[in-house]
Image (cartoon, rainbow, N blue to C red; front, side):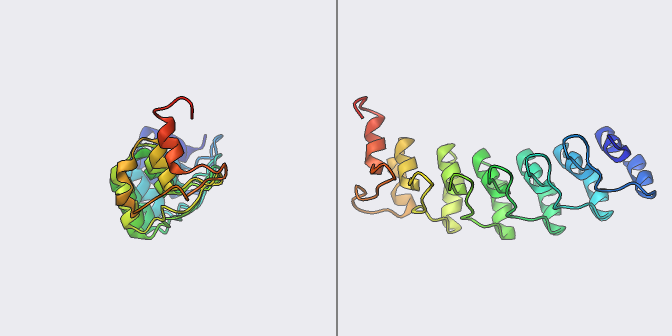
Length: 213
């Protein structure tokens, strides 16, 4: 572990400043491929984050699972850090090894304020992960319906399909929330909306109540 990482872990601002006046690589990584900036973000060490960014720390570096500092700030839910990273041109739509962008992570966690910040900065509302899921689908699956409403208002497409052919309506029925269909703009019969197995959203709704399905 480098001197910068150690200073961040101690939240030792003065040592961090002193080290940065030397020839230490601001983007040096530890055994987990974390830069000092990533550690500062994970620890919500705002002052250290400010100093490292001002010293030119990269916002595009990725850790061992492909996550940037913005991914890590999203996981921590620290909106001031997210705002600062965005100011330093952190990539909004970079995906990790699972295909998860910061917005998808925010939707998975049900983080409304973080989702709002990312969308306001221009994050893609319909970016897909490795399974063809968009942030909207993750919000529904997690029961985060306030975030779901936000994503729909931002233009998320409930008819987009996953790799298994599921739409947002299939997910809602599988979660027992057919009552939210109209919120997503659906009106009328949905039996023609079939997934890759030929099943409509209604099949998954009925399967919740009838073991024969």
